[in-house]
Length: 216
Image (cartoon, rainbow, N blue to C red; front, side, top):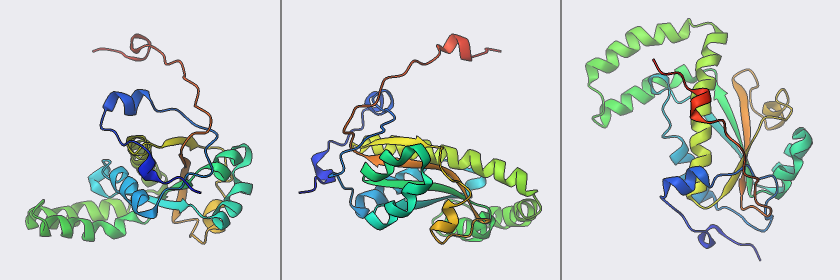
């Protein structure tokens, strides 16, 4: 019998979320996450900041046996995470995210978050800038934004009582097409496995602040 998310304790303890997070390689395969709760986690992840709020991140949630069978061969040495986790979330960037600018700003006006004149000014000045930005520069901006959303996703998952592992070792040139996505428009950032650990992740040493910080 599967164990569902209600078994796990949610927490708002920031220290527990931050210092308790580990990269987990092996999960309890009996643990499932409902799509309702996964939607909550993704919604919380989507509160991450992004350049002029264009939210370029896109999520592919692989939570079915059929989906995992398609993903596992692409995961190289990370197949344990794919096959035992409750789900694997593919984080992508949308290279055509400028198409959503009018919708995002328009909704902000409707909700009272932005004056109409600010929306008009933004569309007049920012839209052409983004439309003419070199693809490499747009990719750099989008990757930074998607990285913020990815980290927020892992922290949100921890707050819901789940464990995660960010994965960079997979066939990035094949994943979009494997799942019927336009590989030029949707470019991969990372995979994030999510579930309940069957084997606790190892603690890791972090360089002290004195070694990584310059004060000016």
